[in-house]
Amino acid sequence: MACDAKGGDVLDYEMQADGVDFVTAAKALGAWVDDGHERRPDTKPFVLSARQAMEIIAFEALFLLCCAGTLRNGNPLTPGDMDRLATCTGRIRALSEEFA
Image (tube, rainbow, N blue to C red; front, side, top):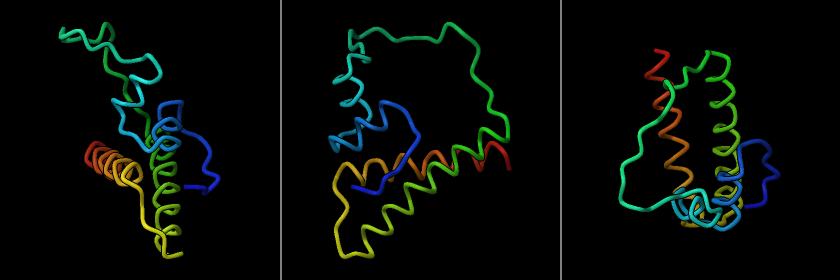
């Protein structure tokens, strides 16, 4: 999808560029260890400020806008776009529940 989206991280880029899911992108970048052991975070969970949450929502809204533009132009979404769309809506839902 060529919508000139900016922001995100290298995993977002890899998922969008190759049309793959999160795990596949992480494995392609060498950031996924699949050794059968459960990983537990060494640090406390990161707490988002309201400003950070709004920045995430703005980023996800940009992706939604790109998807809407793609569909409006009569082009179907790729399977990678559909996976990213599910991630996008999940993130927005989680933030709305956290800050409601």
